[in-house]
Image (cartoon, rainbow, N blue to C red; front, side):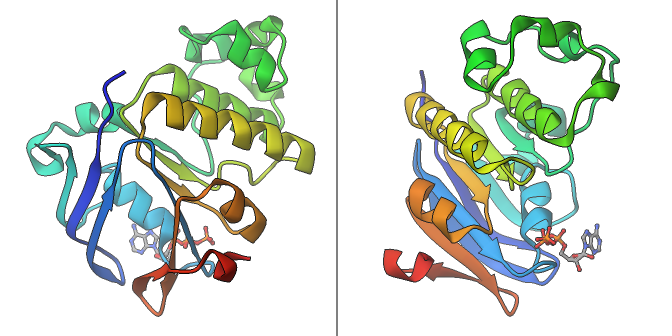
Length: 206
Ligand SMILES: Nc1ncnc2c1ncn2[C@@H]1O[C@H](COP(=O)(O)OP(=O)(O)OP(=O)(O)O)[C@@H](O)[C@H]1O
């Protein structure tokens, strides 16, 4: 394991401007805000998928000096709606560990399933497995448990947090649920009136 830090320097996209943030290795920063406030847009810009201003750094590596495909392999976005390009699930998951499949509620035969039969919650869990199996260096999670029932949410949360801590991935995690934020976040920031503001007190998260 080689832990990394993720930093934003005068980062700007849409209504958000001059965002300065430092995420330490293995740190989870939860990001909330009203619908349409710009959470997904910020994550997409950080993954170098949308135009933006300012700079992002993975350790000493500047986003602007890194080919986009290489940056995205290191700073891995798991969007709210995952994309699937092959018909067979296993073609997307060549390196997945059987233990991880089992933890997220699958048996190994899921690898032979057609993507077209997956439920939205199955897609979401498999998209998380796919991202984690690629061994990124930082994670951008856009409402990673939005389509899941309460018991599965807890299981996926615990698995993600354990993996993020073990691998030392700095993680931006978009969440609406205050209970989830209280369970997983080291820090909680909120987008209000076009500004990214820190929620200083844990008591304010719930
Ligand atoms: N490429 C783009 N160009 C211009 N405007 C955009 C672009 N992408 C998104 N927007 C707009 O920016 C705003 C923020 O969108 P975003 O998807 O980031 O919201 P969000 O905070 O993630 O909301 P939700 O919680 O509903 O998912 C919205 O008004 C959206 O229409």
